[in-house]
Image (cartoon, rainbow, N blue to C red; front, top):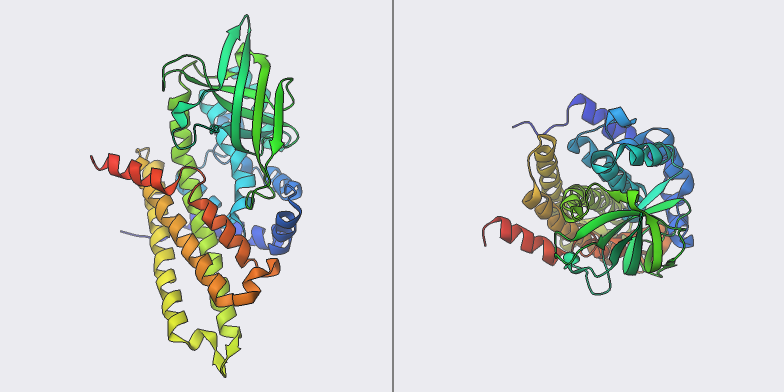
Length: 378
């Protein structure tokens, strides 16, 4: 088995790395994390290069890349921050849902603006009483003439507050637990929609929100696909989302480990470099092994998806393991850098905060293990 990238894949990897260093950079990401401001300039650069359309079919103006090319994209754009990567990726999932499940009118109304960077998307699944049990959502959408009337409370909807954002909102359109869920497009400035940004320790530049819906109305035509099919659509979404998240964890773990190695080589204590102490170099050797193992899990899952196969267990294994690895790499980095790790200019505290969130966001590690066990027949 050949584990090397093809020439095209390697060129894509190199192009993205060059872009991240020359067109974005650590300082830019650091500033936007500290100021809690969305990276609009960088986002527009992605749009201008056509990269937002990575998962959109060519017939709709996108690049129609396969899962391996997408995993490469996610790995590299997360090298300095998982939050920055989320700021780019979050809109891409809903655009893909519209491209594959939306009406011709929806595609014409939303995709050109998304590809140009003018329209952003957020996906709203979680509720205060429906986190890991996502199908227990209580937000209701009731058809009144040719409009959906929405009432309920959503939480942890990343990017919903940003100007020009359309929320892909999961709402209950009938009592059936799974068959009664629909995807409805809700502009974030619609009357009856109250969005409040949350002061979280992560998602600082993208931002995450709580949403209150009080008799909010949108046209009946804003439903994606068929009523009651939302659970099936979000299942497709989550398989790709978990691949993308696992890829980002690998990319950021790689940087956290590399930063730790560089620091311990340069920093001297007791007359010799920190990297010469066995406790540290063995620890870094373990993390090197784990980062490479996590990367293999990611690209194994991506290869399955690229072949058109189901990869539910594979993406869950990749996500849960890569999240743990990212956390261990950043935790060890915090220990190795000591007091300097507390300073934002060393970046490690950001890696640490974001890696902890990796164990919760996009489906908790406990849920991923339950999915894996179910796929094993347990």
